[in-house]
Image (cartoon, rainbow, N blue to C red):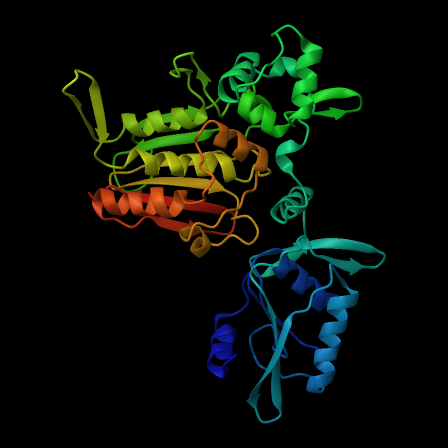
Length: 410
């Protein structure tokens, strides 16, 4: 790190990615900051800097300070970490130690030893604190150590799943036999074998994915399962709006024998909302069939944005819908949760494939909402918008949400 870069960090003060510490503090205090940053998006712990940003320098000799840091990262952190260590001479006799933690730490959640216990810490602004149970669950999910979509939904039974949609899925989408609607035992065996149900204390209980995809009333049990859609008249959120809709129900549709949609799922309801509130044109072709074109946005780009939000959002964040906002100049879709571990915006632009909800993704692939190539973002969203009106979509990662903006050219 250059001295000018270090000066900029100290001038800006502590934040979610920068912590100031003396090196004569207790080692577990430094380990706590290292763990909290590693569980977020990495950052820097500057040793030899006072809380107000004043450089006081290392109290230890440089080599001993490095050994001290590496020892605490091995003995007080689990899984053990090996951070990047460097020093910068601020002025003669004043050396600053820099612990650099990568953005993508693959083994989350990291824990720090506190007495006889191991505690998960998270970074919130410029402070570090013990993680809640929900925050720790999200860290396990981000690292792939926990599959939230196949956890049981307590209190649910087979009766809470829509057998019509399930029969539709197995017979028409997957092309396989399935039991008669009244054969409860056979249905439970089939759903246990496909992870739409799991066994819990001797009973078959629907999983999160089973309820989200095929539930009769998913929002009752998983209030984070829907989309809040609002069409605004101007550029900003306003109480005055053209239409507001709370989109609820199972993710997938009920499809008729001729492949027409009998009952829309959440994804198609979201598409219908955009269609109703966007400029379009229709005409009759030479064979007398009605054709339709969206003038504001290409259909494939809108579909991809909504599908990605539904498939990849963080469902451990309770009670928070996906937000779909239509403004006079753009469509904005806000998906709860940071990007899954190792995923970045730049990787998405290049077609990187990763998922948070594996079973939901696989079912949406069966319905052909998702392709296996991973090229939905670069090809359907980015290139689709450039071909449609020459605008570049915004892909914005924030601490606890991911935002996609498509511009209509107005």
